[in-house]
Length: 105
Image 1 (cartoon, one colour):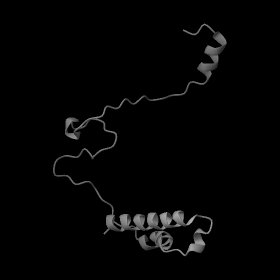
Image 2 (cartoon, rainbow, N blue to C red):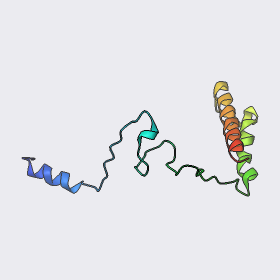
Image 3 (cartoon, rainbow, N blue to C red):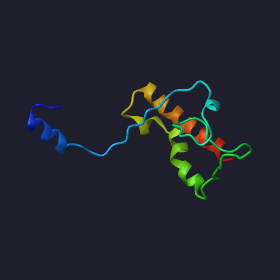
Image 4 (spheres, rainbow, N blue to C red):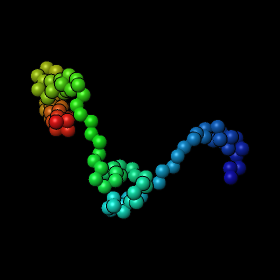
């Protein structure tokens, strides 16, 4: 298809293996037949089977410590940031802690 042989060779040298995924949006996930491939959405499990959950790591509190500290950190920790950014960082850290704590109760 390319009349320029040099360009064709250059393009051929750059070819890499690839997979083309073509997604189609659906209004209701129930429209997707069981066993069909999904990108995102709810898990496709048999009726009555709960999605598996993992409990807290044994060192949960140690892992959470830096996030808890960020949520109440003195302004000195964020001296490079503007006041609005400092408040945003604290709120994000607090939301992260709350989200993880509520997930692993």
